[in-house]
Image (cartoon, rainbow, N blue to C red):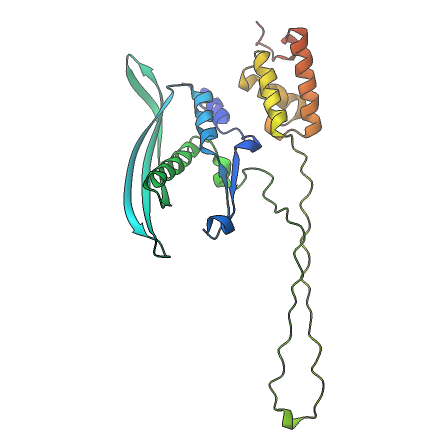
Length: 263
């Protein structure tokens, strides 16, 4: 595989994910004290299979599990997984790797199987990020929906403490009024205009019907809208769906394919 072929493969692996692939956790619900934004495990596996093909990669894992006691005194299980992922191909019954990566993942659960599963999926997602899959989660650029949508911050009132001077040293007087300080409100997040997950699914479905390869469709959309399919606006997505649907209805796709892709 040439250097240029590897660059194209990396671009396909590192392509942005649809919104439906994103998962968010609320630290107030999980009890971890912090919120997270990441990718669902199955979507990461799907990307590896779609780009590399079945049998184009394999996983080696080692998992260690031990019983622990949580801070609240409850019994639990802690698992740590070390995962190695190899990219390659099968030749004469032997897997010949041309790239590999290693990553660790940990998870604590009340259930031992859940602990093992959690550590393994965490390690796999981190390992795949070495090849570009889901790298946005670790860059902090996963999507454009990270701005909180919960409206303005409620005003906070600060009351000045009463004076500690002895009453006998000054005439009695009414207490001073409370000092109220209102914190500035946080501006609401701008309305989101990116295409919906249903629109993205429709684009890929019609494109497959027309015989588009993934990279060919991306190049076509990039040249037409100067954006990848996942980052089109809703109006752009509607226009693209209409154009693709018309081609599908006419039974030909030659007018929209890239030069050199006829046939």
